[in-house]
Length: 415
Image (cartoon, rainbow, N blue to C red):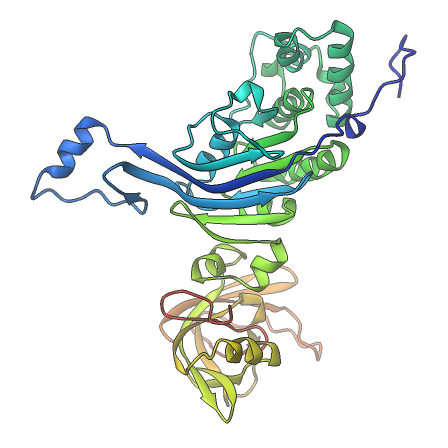
């Protein structure tokens, strides 16, 4: 679409970059050194130690440990995990805003550890928007290009094209204070993409928005990704964003990578208890159970329920010569099934029943554990099953292909 009075052909964003944008993070580590006061405090005896999940060494607090990841050209990578797990620190090291304490960062095969941020061809979108309040939307988006002393016509082309992509053309003459949160975030994204960077970094860009706006902006980011020719690294603590946006998800905890995989892989095959509990809403149910080996077959036993595992799980466990043992059994809420008979079932007592339209969420107690069971409001015979109340007993079962078998140290025994 040509602007009024414009006759020259414009190169669209998605055709503007021909160079690759691969990233290789090899053993990346970040250590925040102790201050002098911290060292002295640490040496005092008789004082309780401050609780932290990050490793503390003589050199300092290790915020990120041995982070290894290869990112393909135009891939959308999401770093996800709880607050303080090291995901934003990792992003800032890629951007050059944090010094890399150990390891190597390569962009397109070039070592970037000591390269200035402005020379890395990276743009970053922050949680706080960071717009200049005295500038219009147009001026905010044009600012990084003016710093580069770019041609005025080229600045105009890029700003207007980015505004068109993000549907903010009608706001170009407004100041940020006249915009909603979602519109401000689009301006912040527009300011980043006008630079046509190799890599676009996004640090929890939607966390300041309400739930409805977050849903809308997630869809906008998916559309944006299809329109621009850029590699994305996106940081969030919201697993919904991670599952819907990422080609691959990197799940972090206490500075360590817990698992890397596609959204479906980490949902179907969590590597450990942390990943299993973090990915999926509501959270996976966990039970103290036993893994049995009888007649060359594996079974799980919890309460009065004994279930033979699926062929795939039998094969995975056998390939690792897994012995019978006490385990933590994981079953997702939607994989729990109500049984009309008590034979070979797990008993649960309802604490709270929530009717959610087509589903009922039962919050119950089973084997001393708080669990959630999600069932349709109507069974296969057309009978409504939303008549249960607090204090009622449920007979639960599950099939052998939906069990997740974890060792007591948290590792998934299948892998």
